[in-house]
Amino acid sequence: MARTLLDALLNRTTATPVPFASRSATFSGGLFGSNRSAESQMRAMSAVGTLFAIVDCTSNATALVDWKLYRKAKSGRKEDRVEVTSHAALDLWNKPNPFMPRQEFVEAQQQHFDLTGEAWWVIARHPGVNLPLEMWPVRPDRMAPVPDRDSFLSGYIYTSPDGEQIPLGLDEVIQLRRPNPLDPYRGLSPVLSILPDLDTSRYAAEWARAFFLNSAQPGGIIEVPVHLQDTEFDEMRERWAEQHKGVNNAHRVAIIEHGAKWADRTISQRDMQFVELRGATRDAVREAYRISKTAIGDFEDINRASALAAKSWFAEQQTIPRLERIKGALNFELLPMYGATAAGLEFDYEPPTAPDPEVEALQLTARSGAVAVLVREGFDPAGSLSAVGLPEIAHTGRPAAPAPAPAAWADAVAGLTGGGGNGGIEAAMRWEAVATIDDNTCGPCADNDGQTYRNRAAAYKDYPGGSSYVKCTGAEFGNECRCKVVKRRKTGDDE
Image (cartoon, rainbow, N blue to C red; front, side, top):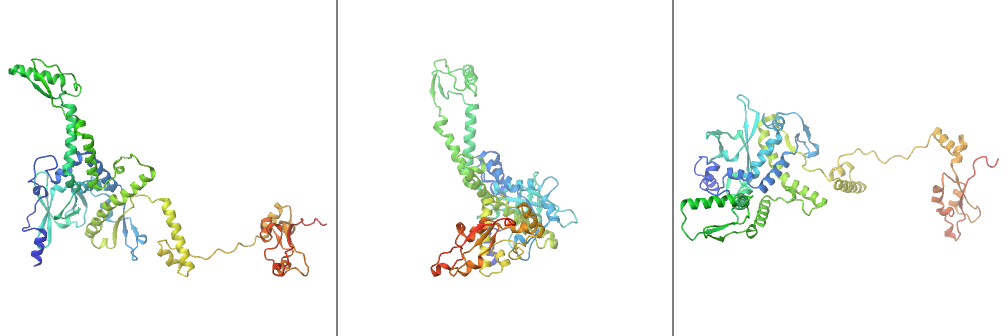
């Protein structure tokens, strides 16, 4: 029962591989619209400028990102991972084969993926060595899965340029694909959804080119009322081409002999609206790939803020999904090929865009404030830091009050203020509280009588404006404060 259901879902009756190009063999003729093969999709990149710009942009952005290998943390948090700098899998990823660094490998496979919806990595091993030693990006039109009725997939067939078919095992191939709703073995490309638009763009460009190279303007039909001999016809055709064909001869006045009459048949480029047509085609291609104008270099009507927003959007919506697909292939297909030596390891990529300093500062302020509130409410400081995503910081309590200045330092200060020895310390206290002592003097005023202050700011803090002690309680009994602060005379002035 399970086998019958599987056969129905996969629509497979045999295990014979069906090459991708062969399944499209029934479509022929035309440039792209009627040729849906993987090879045709890849050729479209060099035929349509907008498609080239998009694929080149996405593949370059994906290839420029740096990668690292980590040992997973028991906590499961990324910040607790430990970087691994020496491993055979890391060496292979940094240099997949003797002829390609990682950047070129990623760019090539990403071009395949963006154009056909598939990317294929073929793993090479040396005889007697079970570990992967090389990886090669292979053209999708040369790879064909071998379906299996029992195990879903039994292997792959690679067709070499000379037509030889080479069987490959499951452990020799890694396939990345955009899921195809009609075929679980193959990927789906955005190119397939815009083939007519690509045809339109290419034909419009070719028409414009032919207009300048081949158009014998003025264009139309030459009507001759009599039958021309072959020599007369050939002479007239050659003279016409000589005088009017080509860019340099465009729009020259035509002089027609033998009573011939000119019938205008010209359709101008303006009438055909080729500029608008090609613009609409560019929009259709960008729409299929979800690419903004700024991503491919169109900065019309854009300012710095919108440019930064577009850059961030491109990284989040275009580059990161591509990196995540590669990350999955590395961690779930490549690393297991290294057995126990790769247990607990994982590849991860560096963020494709630098963080915004202003946003980071706001986030740090908000997180710090949240920690302060949590700690004030009695929560554990370390747990509060972890809850808001901040690293643990050793808590040593509030800073202690400043220690009294040593005598040597105090003497130095006194020397600067004109005093010396202990007299200098006294001289440094330049203001003194003076209270009127009688039966109406309150306790706080009497206690503060004679209190000295280092400077005016300190004295006026207790006696705003120079009078009326801030702690006076005489007002409770209907008495006004009669205290004030005065400037002290230096020690020895009375002598």
